[in-house]
Length: 500
Image: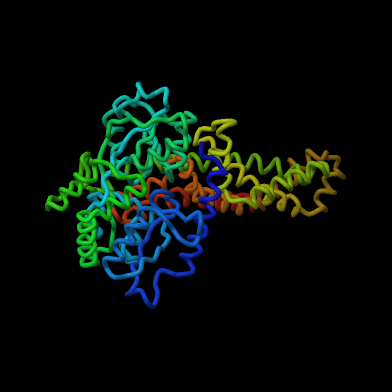
């Protein structure tokens, strides 16, 4: 099973690649003699990963394809680290000459980028637990079940189609490692991804099996800026020659990826036939403009409701725990104060993203928290640490003379807190509390890493599918404003009331 020990070498390698990419920069004086190609080293083998023997270089079949293209152009290949979900936008900006990182051909990409001919054909297949191999053979068999995949992929499009046809429930992940881990743990019932990823997932997780029936067919391509069609045509010619003379076959055999699908693909391309984008196309062309807004608005509204519910519940949890922690640090015995202080510093000193990973993935073998519950606890406990500091400061800001006066009147410590100290501290804490609630509303976007599809994640899927962030970004921003502005108004009214 994939665990921390397995992740660390790959993470260190990725860090080395990132440092190298940062040091070299996206452009240089000799850019004309280099082929700058973008990819994501976090994709791992066999795509792109840091060389275990030399962390300053990358290896993988995409690295060799980039080398092949550079050789044909008389250039030197140079790698640029780009997050996978940003590759399309970076290509459109012209940040690199070509993007190569297991990028799938699609009509959306064809419409907005210069796309090379396909150089590898893959099949989308289902992965299930060994005990379910006879039960879940097709998407129709998974009616009402949770099926994991990656967002903005052919597999995701197939699952969305299956959702409307069979009632399949797509579960979107940020990477291709955790879907297979969660399948083994029983959090999802199947995984739908291309067989290159599926084979890797099964190797890492004994107890899983890949179904032989294909669900769809797709192709890996290179992407360039839409103005770079001349370079794209040169690359197409290089790829065709490499198909004819066997150089591509040699690359894929070296990475154990060669199969009977590739000769058929190459024969079609060499023979002048146009390869289809996919044998199982999405039911409609990629939406744009007003049609896109209308089509995606219901999904964005559902995601906005999830964001609002998660934020409100998390803030309530943060307030409750924050009050308890602050009270313990002000009124508790020394041992309790020390323990609570250590807890606050631990939470404030570690990233929220890490805390979410630990709650959802790290504790999975002990307790399997539902994704929404893990998100609620992660956000609530994280913000409770910050809220406790606000409340502690507010409690200590109440003048000592008022506390002495309360005691002189015979009030107990509990009565003093409830009747004198607490209300004044609340008035002082109200403004920063409101600020924290707005911040939490935006930080809720981080929970997409544990499969909760909130507003920002749904927006990123929307943007990837139509190939632009302009409309999705504007709609997302408007929804966040609609959610946050009423909160600020209510807080101001409360502040005015407490001042009176």
